[in-house]
Length: 251
Ligand code: PGA
Image (tube, rainbow, N blue to C red; front, side):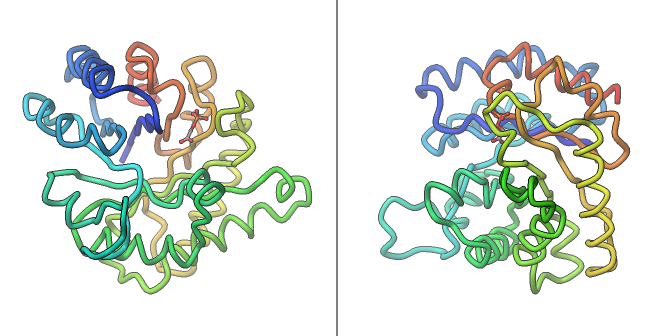
């Protein structure tokens, strides 16, 4: 399955967000989309208006950028997976490196969130990826697999079938420095092999993320184990995002 996710991060006012979504939705014809599953992940405040806006265009799914692992309770500032489900949100990005870095999310916490998301029928988009020092020291393959193995621990084969993985090397996120197509393919093939070995299936979509944009996407999307992209900066521009959808469709 080919998937393109736009991660807007903490960008756009509600008005700007809806106008961006309107632009994407208007330009996204059946012809452009083809077999690509298109997902947008706006800031939490825009989730409900985005879902409502997209009633006219069910081709686009909506994802949250994070959620808590409990259903409800005294967790000021948090949003529960149950709330997302009830708001008709389809998916949730979990374990993004910015959550890990700035909000101290651990592998174990990400695992709890993945389980909670699946329990509420949300598709978890599980982010993993190495830091620059891990790439330099040569431990990046196993370090990234460890993150993923913990995030998916205790999942049943049925649970695993609904998971989307995003490989995002931390050194490539928002830096303009993109992994080379070979680097992306090496990691994706490695993770797929490990998934197969450990869970008996490697058939999960594995997306690449990190400074992916129209000028570098062709070679990345052409890699056999790259099933799509998790796009930050370039997803804030409707034309670029649409171009990426087209490139993925043609890959
Ligand atoms: P970027 O972000 O495309 O701006 O590098 C990707 C991401 O963090 O998901």
